Image 1 (cartoon, rainbow, N blue to C red):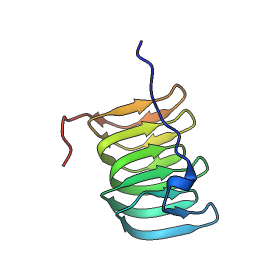
Image 2 (tube, rainbow, N blue to C red):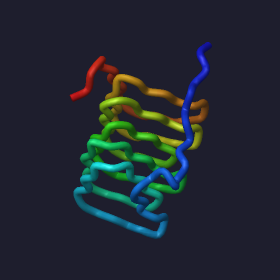
Image 3 (cartoon, rainbow, N blue to C red):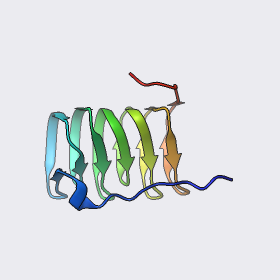
Image 4 (spheres, helix red, strand yellow):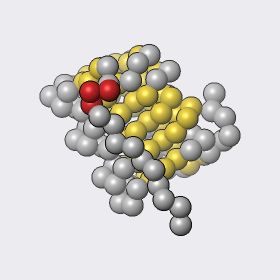
Length: 119
């Protein structure tokens, strides 16, 4: 079996972090890496990478370059490059990405689609 190569991100590499005491509702767009550690509800559109923290709850339709999930996502996720699910993560919704990596223990309930190119 091939070894999974999920890279844990250093928060110092992230331009913007929505802290764990933040609750945000609406449409979120960004062009530099972003981490959500609290609660977000709405829609996320990005040309960059999205990181979901361990205690985060994101209820959203997500489109990003890469989605790296340690928390809980409720909603459909589309990534142009990759979706990463770490061991404590959960996704309740459909996933679409050319590469999807899951650690043992990750939970996924939905439909998975892996096209060669995501637009």
